[in-house]
Length: 284
Image (cartoon, rainbow, N blue to C red; front, side, top):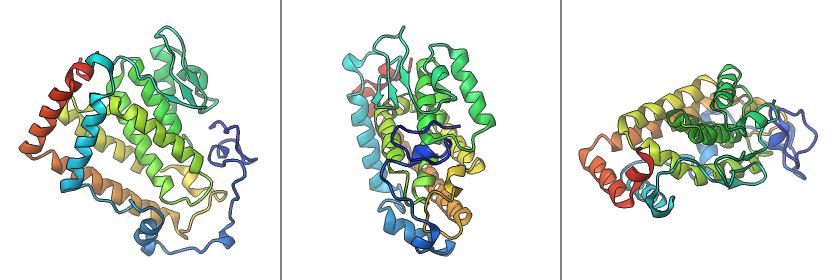
């Protein structure tokens, strides 16, 4: 079960991570419901970027921003062996490679994720694959970080993308009770993402495969927190809403791949990585 946050209210432990203190949970009768056919319109109204399509100039800007992050993500272009991020109170990286990080995302995983033992980290990964139903995006972010630290960098890329897609599914369907979890997971993505993507784009073919595999895993393992009655949603049919969100995600995955199909775009990315020192930092 997922670990309740310190500020959560009294819901079952597996669910309470999403419930910040003082947050009122609206019952279904308090909020208007909408049919699944209006999912896109409601998403656009509630989430300004819900219908954001990654294409053309938008993706070029994304690549430029990504490369800027790479250029500042490691001092003196040294090889990045570990991800030193802090997202309080959930994760604090150790200051020394021999020390253990502080982890507080899920009671079932915290101790093992904090250990500098590759076998223990892979054990958590195996358990998540076996029982993924209520594993939070935040827990997946920490799993990704610790896999990278232990040298399982391909697995780290996969779970980073899974965490982002799983977060997107719940954040665009559930309307209240998860703001704290959303902010924390986005903080993980913003701080660990440059390192994860720095490695991922060492090999464009592998990156594309990992991105597709992550999407398929999220599609095939729906996040069950989306369907909890304690978490309000404007959608009368959350299953149908989830299908539409997954379509939006798949469209973005396809557009990302299409952008990098063009030789000129690949050349620009390669040139930017060389100038930033990304290959020296991550492609070892």
